[in-house]
Length: 125
Image 1 (cartoon, rainbow, N blue to C red):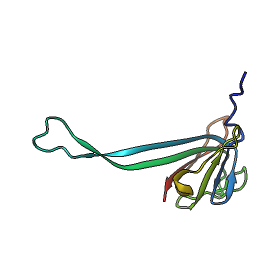
Image 2 (cartoon, rainbow, N blue to C red):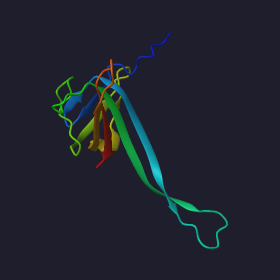
Image 3 (cartoon, helix red, strand yellow):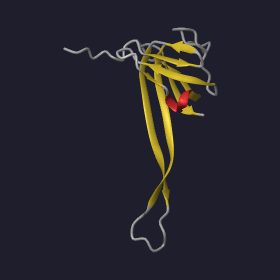
């Protein structure tokens, strides 16, 4: 049976710092809908706007000092740098946004009897 653990040991590198352990990485891309409906149109008419890509990442670990426990990488919203995701099974990589990214959101939390987590959101620059 083939292994279904291809995500395990995946790493995220941002601004030259490798961050692990990662619980999840997600990539989404949508486009704006531009309403160009005229007064004589029987239905709404749209044109395609600009794309709106986002990468989200959930890491295991956080600290009150603002650095991740698993590598002491300081992650602050507003930081820019190269972003690279390296997958375990294939050694393949995802270089989103032509490698230049802005860290737009850093959320840290935890729950009773659970681990601390950090959620990151990246946008292109």
